[in-house]
Structure formats: structure tokens, C-alpha cells
Image (cartoon, rainbow, N blue to C red; front, top):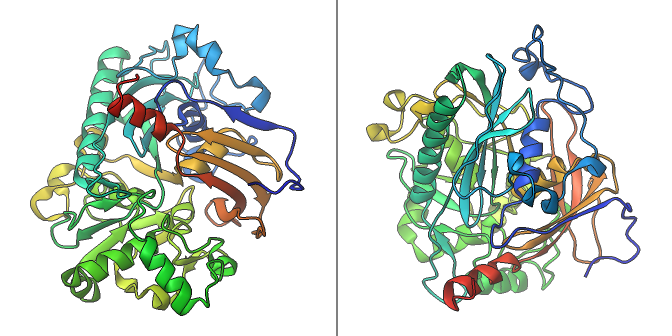
Length: 439
């Protein structure tokens, strides 16, 4: 239940999803476009590639929520479909347009799309679902290898089809990519081989309920909110730390390897960047780090007391970077991958910089231009999520809301948000479709 007296702006963006597609697609699209320019400010890192001499306008406009097209509008205008089955293309008259890539890795599927910085439209998009594993009641797992394989093939296919669809398209026209991802989902992989050592435990997996109860009663005096001042979060099965505790308790050999520094941990963003950069970058951004229960939301760094509480070796953790213009590295050629066996890199994007990472709900809020404290977006996807911008100071809720970084630009203060979350929304529709054939 959300706090009734919360000063929520009356400019609430409320957007339902089309059928069983669970990604906040248009939000991600707008988010990645806007990463390059907010309120008419161009970051130094992107200013270099914005063309200055062209017959078409190159300034990316400030987006106003009132101008956002509705899903109803898109269903009747083929030039900008929200949910293409595989891809949608929009050829451009510009001979030397520039593009931004967006990798949207969600709970049910992965998308890669290419956006024109001249026309602010999607010029190519591909999408693929990955398998959901339910080995026991309440358990949810993904294959991190399958997710990477899907991402790699989607990137390759999208750029290949864009080169066929767009006149004079070249890889050098792709100036950067951004990544948005399902949060909290936990991946452990071998430092030497770059391969996962266990299935990825998904954010909505409930297997750690007993661990949460045990830690709450034995270490937190029965108060599940004891970590709120540090993390902004309650102790819950959602967050990555409890998943790591479960993995180490149930697989002693993994704990031993972790303590020897032979394993690497990351949320899905970390995993994808590690593979894309050929093993050169083991990083995450503040929005994803803050969903682990291991990050202090004031310092935006790993917290030693939290690491001790959950008994997590610091050596397995990624470096935390600002969400926008953080040091996320450059996509590697496959033959130049530093991962054993060359299982990394992506030739289709080789040399392109990873410019931004945001957790999925943060990207949706960013894409809806909620830049003023009090502005709110609501998403109905796999789960249902409400985020409200609270400015540059984290605010703690007494009514069950989560405190989280909203985004951070490099060398600037983080902007924070309050979040309300419901685990099951669109996933119920998917379950009905898959199990009762009601689709």
C-alpha cells in the first residue's frame, strides 16, 4: 500500500502493456535517446559525435510527457509500432545519420534496437524470449549463457538487417550503446573461463525465504527493516545478497572458489558488459548495485558491514560506476576477447562504447522524463512498479516503499527515488497463456 499523504505530482504517467509483452518498450527507447541530451545539455562524451553540419536537425528535443504517444496511437500508425514481432525498420534520407543502440534485457525476453539521433525513431529492432526454469515451487532460474547468446545474436541480426535497410549504413555510424536490465537477478561465473558456474537466480525467486527469516531473527533482532538506513531496502528474497548466501550455503565449493577470488558476481548488466568487452570490464552501475543489499546508498559503494553480515567476499564484486558516462568499456572483437576460448566480444558492435547502464525500472522512469522531484511513473510488466523522483537526497519511507538511486551522471550527485513493487502482474498473464492456453 502506498503512503496516502505522499506528495505525488498530479502528472502521473500510467501506461499499460500490449498483450503479454512485458517490457516498458517506449520508455526504454526514449531513455536511451535522452541519455545523450537532457534539458539541452550535451555531455562531453557525446558532444563529439553530434554532427554540426547537416541539412537536417540534429538537436534531440526535450521530451514532454504530454506529448508522448499513447499505445492506442501506435496501434494505428505503422511508422512506429511499439511491439514488432521480430523487427521494424525505418529508412532514413540522411546519408550519414548517427545511431544509438539499446540492449533491453528483461525477465522474459531480450531486445536490441537501433535509434536514429536525427529522427528520434527506431530504425531496427529484434527480440527473443528466453526459457524460464521452475525447478521447485517458488523457484525461478534463467540460463545466463542463453541470455548472452540471445543478446549476441540479436545485436548481430539487428545490425545486419539495418545495413540492408538503411542506405550507406556503417558500423561507425553507431556511436554508443546503452543497456537496461532486469534487476537483482544473480549471476556467478568463473573468472578464468568466463562461464557461469550455476543457473542465474532470478529476482522474483523465493528460495531464500528461510535465509531471510534466519538472518532477520539471529542478526537483525527480528527487524527486517534494520538495513533500510544503509541500503534503502528491507531484507527480502528479492535482493542479490540473499541469493549469494543461498548459493554459498548450498554449494561449499563455490564459497571456496569465491574466497580464492576465482569467481565473479554480477547482476545481468555486469554479465553482459563482461561478455561484450571480452572480459575487460567487470562493472555495474549505481542503480543495479543498490539492489544487492550490499551497497550503501549514501556512499554508493560496497559497504564492509553489509559484506560481513552476508559473508560475501569483496573480491567477487564488480566496480560501481555512474549510470551515465560511467567507465563501462568498449565492445571487443571476438578474436580479441580476453576470456578463455574467446567466448566473448561481438564483432557486429566492435569498437562501440557502452555509454550507459540503468536498471529497467529506472530506465523507464528516465524515459518518461520524470526529472522533477514528485514526478512518478507506473509500469505494468512482469511485475508492477511505481517510482517517484525524490531529488538528490535519499528519502526513507515508513510505509514499505523502497529507497533507490534513480540515476547518476558521471561526476554529479545521484538522483534518488522511492519505489513500490508488486512481484506478479504481467507474469500471471504469461502463466495463463503458457499453462492454460488462454492466449
